[in-house]
Length: 259
Image 1: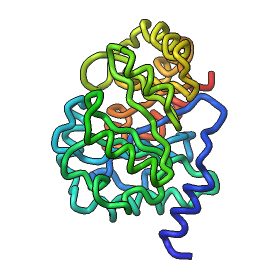
Image 2: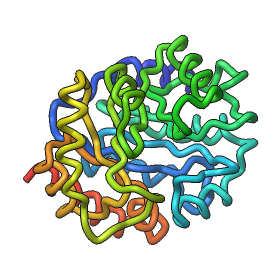
Image 3: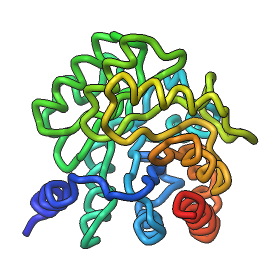
């Protein structure tokens, strides 16, 4: 069996999300300071979804941690780097699901290269609402059986509600206004926003992202009505520190969700 076949079979085998509080964690595509070997720790510590971050020339909603990581990445090696991630995940009998987190930009390979979608379970595009490039990316993903995970930004409006209704994988709800990065507290107003999305017909899991940095906040997110959390900057910081720090953080997050 060749690597491409392994990747495709792993994706097909693992489409459904687990029926437990969901932990989705960022992995920077192409950042040479973060080895794909660390994915063994992600998988071993109960991460359900790997949020594979593709570098963008304008990551306008990301804070300095992700921005610096994207600057280190070589966008020209995206297929090689993505295969390295997916092949690593293919080793596991029940691998974490693979979600591509990306911004919409005119040079994005997903606009003209069908090969991008091989091995992916879901796509999450960060863009202004109605961005035509994001619409094209999402259409291409759907045509290649990659489920959509809408990014629901603040403030909530009718378009955000509609996108949440049409989610195929999970819904990422922006937990705080502003850029990504660890925060000391979690906005309790997320309880009302989650309730609004549910009342509007959102049926897929709603995960809070932006600012969550540990197990205590993960537990609070569940108490506010979320189905899980997405952790980016804090996971990236731990991964850059090393495997031990990453393992400690992921265990804390998993424990907070499952408490």
